[in-house]
Length: 316
Image 1 (cartoon, rainbow, N blue to C red):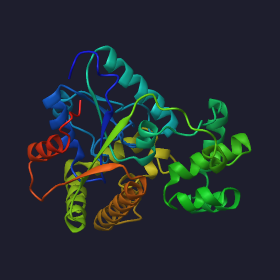
Image 2 (image 1 turned 90 degrees about the horizontal axis):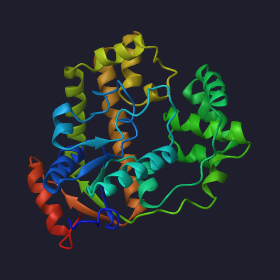
Image 3 (image 1 turned 180 degrees about the vertical axis):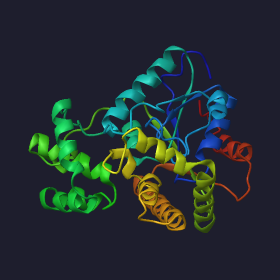
């Protein structure tokens, strides 16, 4: 990278569904080019949630510094708009140091915040947010989604019935402002300050699902149950935003005696595959992604070479 170009070159964004191998390839790319990674993962921003979110290990972070990991506690509702502001600030600071940035992740709205801007989300006073959060905590996810269907049908159709965090965010916007989240979406978006270059990793669907299933089993072996128990001991239970996501919700039910361990594992695997499918749908609809096919057993260094060859005009 030529000096002074860190803030003018398009920002490379490595995307793809969960389990495809973004972390290892991203670290290899960052290591080769002296870049630092901007995480675009909507669950890795939460503290104490390491195993179930497949957060980069200490060794991996030592190989390539990561930003926007462990940002907030699990009971904090963290919006894509807030992510965009923090990500742009992190990228700006890297540019000042003349260090290349590489964004890595699969959260659609986070990527949109980097690639095309987001709607101008309303600022909601913390006291009101806490009051609404307490109100929502007493309701089931299904009941909240039903209420969202009544006040904002478009958002209810867009948001999965089990995605409690996004359901609560949509209701929060409506209840705090009197306007639907859909109407906020339709307002002018923030102007982006820098172009992006989307690079997607893809695998054969059956191979991807097999990797996802194996990764869930590895999470169990690595102590996911103990991690969830620790979170529960900290006061982060079923009503906590981040704990409604796949892996954590099922393990809470297992700890509570509602599911056997095998049933919990199967449920996590199924929800993880469903999430990957939704991500792939989002990527197809987004367009503008340069896709790199990854063969089974392929070393991240080989995938890295494929990416470099696909961009002869330089990534960084």
